[in-house]
Length: 92
Image: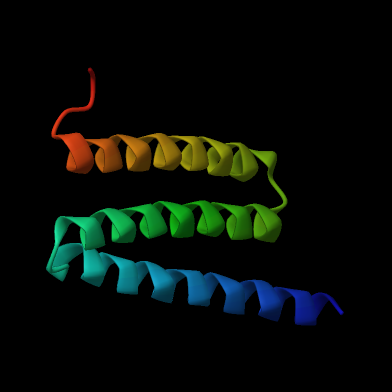
């Protein structure tokens, strides 16, 4: 059972890394700013998921706290970028 769990965690980690590569490609060659913001938001989410997978793999609480910080920063930055794209300014 332990080997099956390790294989599942390894597979999940590999899938998250592949998703991060796809997001990075879209971030670099996205045709519009909206595509790049969406790719950046998805990249933040993939980073959070990678931290969670590593937390499960190593059994450490530090990774879960890092995932929470990544989620908060990713949400705030996505809202700020969306507001900037809509109005041209962040602070009114």
